Length: 482
Image (cartoon, rainbow, N blue to C red; front, side):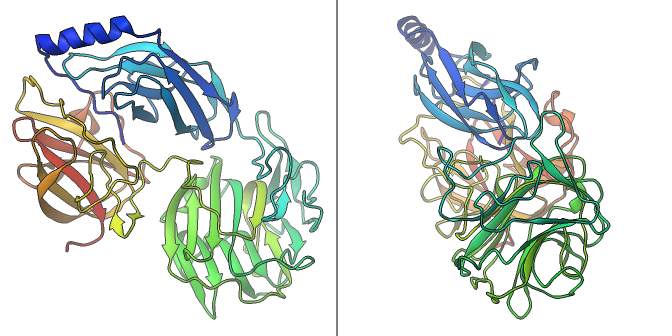
């Protein structure tokens, strides 16, 4: 989601309240930790001295960026102090957080505090806590000069022309030329015996090219043995043109990320495949991108080896692979490790709300509970009848847009929901949904906001044309019409 700027004329009562609030509080402060993080790592922000308006907000910025060039953001929802969790940007560099006063009756927002600077770098991701490796780690490879397993159980062997490089600002990584380079680590589920019913494998990847078939990691026979019968992370043109994670069960059970491998060229990305009671999953940059309902584990406890950078069919990877971790439990990155505010998924059996303001009773449900009650001042004193407001970034696909007339006085409540669509949203395209007409059309980004650039090919941008005189609640559901 992107910030919805509240630009409304106020009343004398609201203005008086704002002056009293600001005059009685402490000086606003912000602090961010840790000082250096991987892309998509968790960052903790502690704030105090906020004015106390529902629409005060904090956002992440490059240190030299204008206030209009914000990254991830969060409303403070009336809290004057507290702690928030953000996900570090994917792009390396120096960043900071900024806090803004934004009361509903004002005509603008005002910056009131900045945090310390922190760095986004790519360092080795470690599952260890206080330097100790968790018991659920099956094998851990940092590639810090060698292919040793940090658990001491399953050392790797380098084959072909594979080398280990350490570029400035990055942790060490395997460099693979796509022609016979790989690492063999053996059967990591034996000696000692580990659970096959569930597990995960994660790594950092930066491709240099994307052939039709390549494998980041797989379990099965030896290189050239032409039989994979465990897990498979990579591409397989017989099943999909996208990055997939698969589990063998007499045939492949495929979780398709929807992400073409070309998107991994020249940029570090975090990828993870899991299997277990939630089914088969593939995660990219901390977001669950594809699932399969199959809940079976690895079928062959006596598989020959895990291969990193290839598989038994010699589907070699061309690029860099950073630290690799194999677990014997089904990991999840949805518990605060990564931000998922722009993901559409399922919450307790109902589609997740892809807008910010849906509550109990909505056909799409927000992942996080919102404070209750919340008075909606958004349209007080609005000078225009219609306003374009930011929706969310979505994966390309088919969606239903739900709209309901807002119950007076409260955000996100409606007893009059209607479904529109399904609409097909294409990547690299911005769309405007007219709430009154129930129609959707593609638009140029500058028609929505002069500061917007075209969205990337892997996402679609959704905005709403809403009436200030007749406010509605919106949410978005994946799939076909009911």
